[in-house]
Image (cartoon, rainbow, N blue to C red; front, side, top):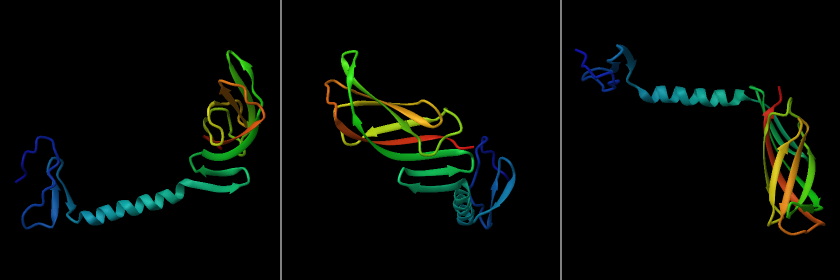
Length: 157
């Protein structure tokens, strides 16, 4: 006789049975949860391989294209900083070509300066083929080089 569970699923194994009964909706399932879990894990692994369309790396960095049209790419650039006075700060502007162009300019960008301390960096996507980096410092230090790691995610199809 089913028990009233107040709308909650009752997954207790009935005595003397190899099945469980979801008593609120009346569905019999095998009691072997390990097989269910194994099947789910196998499905996840199989599905994960189908999501990557292509990937690669070259001198410009590395990239992954997914079946759903998403493109992620990470690349490194080193530039010479030439700062000019700007609103009480010093600013350098760099236009950077994206190694794998996106289909439009709706993408996200993150950037990290890894070889120069004491500056604020802002990255803006200008077009589907380039990013503009704005570097700000409280003092003028032109002629120094800075290496940036840039990651961008957008659409390739």
